[in-house]
Amino acid sequence: MLVWERPEPLDRPSPAPLSRDGIVRASIRLADADGLEAVSLRKVAAALNVGPMRLYGYIATKDELLDLMVDAVHAEIRPTGDGWREALCSLAEATRHAVHRHEWFADLIGGRPQLGPHTLASGEAVVAAMGGVDLDAAVPAIAAVNAYVIGAVRREITERRAERATGMDKRQWQATFGPYLERTFATGRFPALARVVRDGPHLDADQTFRAGLDLLLDGIEARIAH
Image: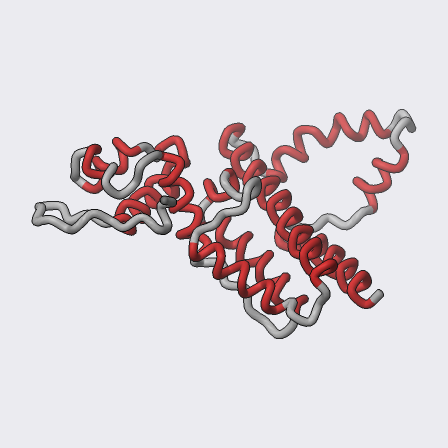
């Protein structure tokens, strides 16, 4: 029986009451503060002031705990809007905002579908918004938006982590490597790249995300219209 269907143990008198939801919330607090490496059943139990063995009545493995954490964050992702385009845009932006609140979430999304109730509710909202679109177009459209968001937010989080690791923000990094690029471009070997760097748009993270999303949605719209 999956954790979503497995009942919790009967509550018992204790100085530290316990619940599956409380375990998940404590785990998310640890991950938000110090990343996924800070989440273990022992550390979660310590945060809740209980013995580690008490957790096993609620969660069988760490993988189950991670699944529950991901599903809890999906409660923050509720696509809204009139029509499929607004719903897909809302899904993308809500997912990105959730990753910004919970950086570790970027490491766990993607791969096999998540099957928790909050995740299913989010998916239901998106599919329902595409009710007027043929499934042959709707299914790959949703998959394309999810793939775009996962790639975009992972790139953003990788940049954040690089800034912390090196102590250099984007502007400092550009100032450090800019002279090298100028010398390299001066050789004339990379004219297309030189034009992009010198004359292309220099968008911030929000603008880059939305521009890419708009291009993708425009393509989906053209496919649906066709």
